[in-house]
Image (cartoon, rainbow, N blue to C red; front, side, top):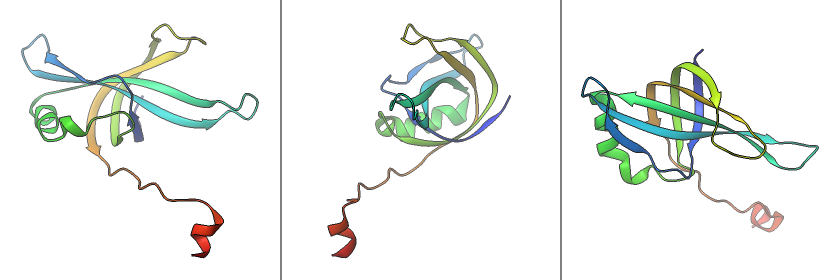
Length: 121
């Protein structure tokens, strides 16, 4: 299964290591904000744990490591998505795991006031 779209960095920091062949490997935990559940009033989120290996991943890490903080938006293309039992959470929810095909840091949205005063000023 493939996924293309906007995901957000979770609070969990990225990890960097090497794969079995010695190539650079970057692992990110990302979040998909699915909206608010009208019955419970709580936000629905889905977790993705993705790996990216090779020189492109290493260059991305070198250029953006300071910017990969909680809530940072990312434009992603993922492949080989599989559902796995997620970390211990309540209610229990699966974690999607996959490989990065493409990943690009997006600019954060500016906080704009939504009051009527701001709209009429």
